[in-house]
Image 1: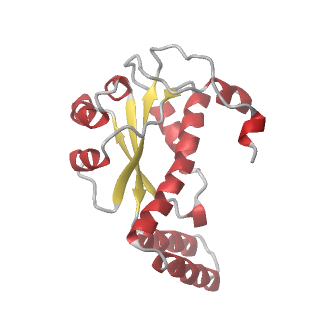
Image 2: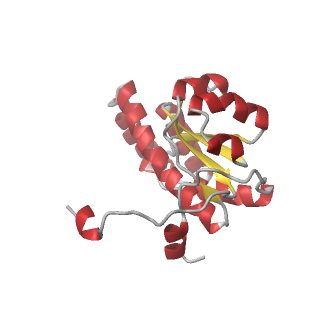
Length: 199
């Protein structure tokens, strides 16, 4: 499928048919998400994948019982990771293990540490959440490229999700993306004309 066709045909699916996405295809999708860009290549996100019916049922009230949650094959809970220091350690360790020059690794770590310490906790969260949406973009278009349907969702209670999924404090649920096969029919795309989105 050409990229133009992907973005033209992708839409926010409101109900899925309940069929399970096979493991191979789903793992291909996760790999596309993994390759998403991020600021400083820190990838400040973690994704909790929910596919069992019991957990989806427990989460549904915290998403206002929207049908996407109960009918999807897999629910991806994109979480912003505010442990920037840990991410810096992980990235620089990976670079060192892959053979990057020690001086380059040291310089990058110092620069990133300076960036991290310049942010308060609220700013760290805001920064991480902006990066989450880059991963979400790969997920939405990647799903369509694999013949899957999806729906970006901000209409949920992050605190309820965090408690139900027993997430650590540094992982903040930011956006949901149920994945599966559509049971509804897309409406014609409604977008502002090009001249209205150019400033």
